[in-house]
Image 1: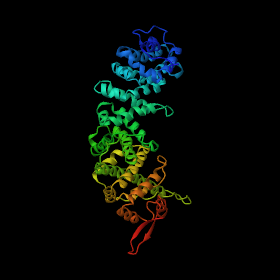
Image 2: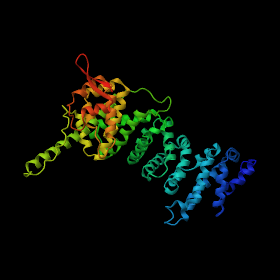
Image 3: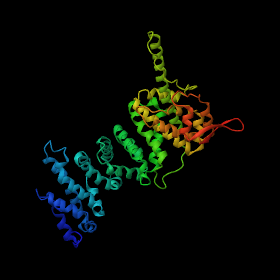
Image 4: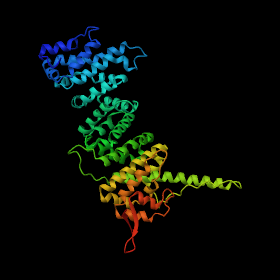
Length: 461
């Protein structure tokens, strides 16, 4: 029908009906009317004709559509309020609003709406899909017109917490589009959020960014500004170097897992918008990751040594005829631990086994990406003698079933550097008992050979 209508001002106002009135008569906005209006709002001709209605009517149209969820909420019983079935008018109204936001006239009208209304709409969980869809459309309007408003950081808080708290089955595509706009267009987005949003909401925001980046299938569609990832790198460096200056160590532990994962995924996928990336010296970031990796290894080693002590005591108390329990593998002995590693180990001892596994896996991925990125990074890893530590991770754990794969991939990238190859052959033929030396090389697609000078080297199979 809308294709054949001659869209002049009279026709547009007729189709908008009570939605462009100063006062909407009770009962005038029915389900049938909204369903018809929603279908019309999808017409490109109608969208173009909305420019005719002028700013006052445009603001009324947006305001009246957004008022429908509030009115419907007041009419629902306590049993209906959490069920999507009871929000039929709201769904239709917000879907129509999403369509007409393609009109610049309507987009300009959004500026007159208080941000608090959007925050209240975000709390209406059954219609979160439609609310977040509309907000994803007006991300630029929020940024250009409300960035200094007191409710502006609260919108991002609410969005981040909603993203992480909703059940996994809920569609988050529009929320992702919302965050991607800011990560791409606002060069200081994460830095600003760190200063303005609630700490727990900031952790949720980091989890959102990590989830968005940890998607190898995104191809070239996902683009963010490099500064936002660089901020995370600098933030992790700051947290690691000021362990005892942070009053809330639990908060630091919550931040480290998603932050290190963001660094790793950004290094692997390079999802940076055109012109935003610049070649930065990430040596300090690498050193911080190495310190964390050594600290986690030290915690693992201490746990193994404690198990050995317990077994020795049990052996002394073992009666005749009782079977021997297998001893755990001996950890690779580090010559010494730097103070920074000791400080991190002190902090990370408070982390759960699952958190340590997540950190270990993320660091392995980051180390592999850095080793293949620049020769000097692989050289630093050789100086830190990380090869035996990476080898010790080539095992499947309860909390990280893919750790072995990441360890093998990282070792493969590290061993493209000659000094790391040499370190590989310095490891005992039964390194920590975790894996077999020859099998490890086979997993790496290599084998050990002796050249004409009598030196060991690696060759591809």
